[in-house]
Length: 195
Image (tube, rainbow, N blue to C red; front, side, top):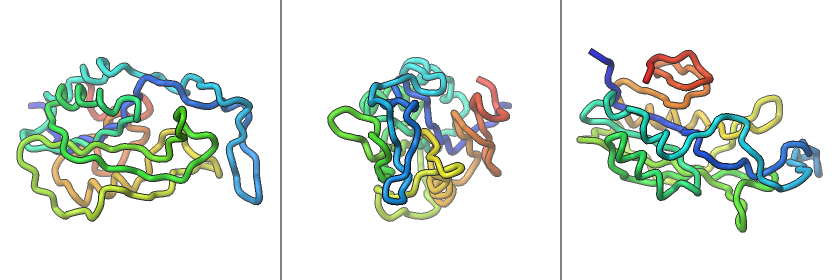
């Protein structure tokens, strides 16, 4: 019998542009590292992206328990279309969580430089949270490697928060690294499952 999961954490590669040129690199201004774009022209992201339909067509529904939770990262562009993914995967929307982050460079976005990311909390069946989390907006520093911010990488804070809330088998979709206690699926990790 195929393994079933009570917790799904997903950061899909939504189809969009990166919002900035990387050709300008970084520079220091008043002792602080800032992005120094050669242009603000949108460019392709440095990884393969997927359409809403491609993401929704991943057969997540077949591997989740009757009582389960989904934490789904979504970009502003796809905020309303994310419901297609939530429905296809067998969940119902519950709560919007917000990662408030310090602006860096020119930010993604048009009229407004977007300084947050959205994590949708969705449920299936009965939920027995181990604890209650105070608030829905979290100001957390973005991950850095060698002094540079990691594009699209989310802080481990959110994984730790999920572990405080939910019990059972856990699966990270579109994972970038393997984590203790979690199964993983994605093109950057040793995969625990196949779709």
